[in-house]
Amino acid sequence: MTKKISIAIDAMGGDNSPFKTIEGVNLFIKKNSFKEDFIINLFGDEIKINKELSKYKIPTRFFKITHTKSIVSDEDTPLTAVKNSKNTSMWNCIKAQNDGNADISLSAGNTGVLLVISRMILKMMQEVSKPALAGLWPNVKNVNVVLDLGANIECNDENLVDFAELGSALYKSLFPNDKAIVSLLNIGSEEI
Image 1 (cartoon, rainbow, N blue to C red):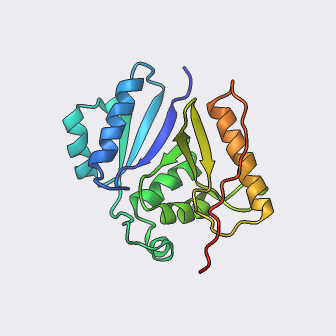
Image 2: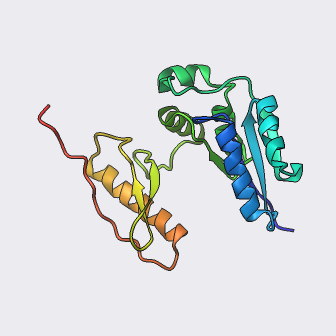
Image 3: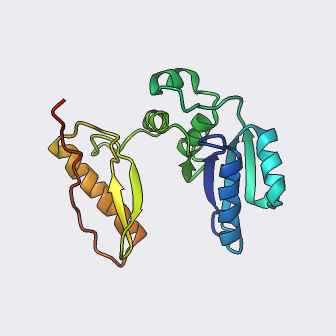
């Protein structure tokens, strides 16, 4: 039997959570339940999570819940959240990956806080100078992988090369039969 993929999810992160998060979990399970090669670790308020899970009648073999006392709000700044986030669903979700209890961690919560906490807990590859957010943007033929997404306003040439390499690697892992083409999209500058 092969090892199950362990997915850690911050169930309390993002708008309308845990409702929207559990709705997404339900869609994922419906699409992939025949494989049964994964386990979903949900982090957050156990009572609220169970209430949402019961609506979809998701079998318990697909998930595990880790109760956390608090959440990171959208109003939190990265600095204040880092000081007060050790008991949050986001922190514990990311920490599960660092501790080897999850293969991947996901959160739809506060992006700035997520980036800072991830960098603190997961660290960075030594060869990479700055972290970058990645997004998938549909195009006429397929999908583009777009990196940084405005997370870093000031980037030097080394950062841009890192982003190009990271984006190419991500694209090749998602679309192994396609050739990655790198382009630069600049936010430009204003008079002010």
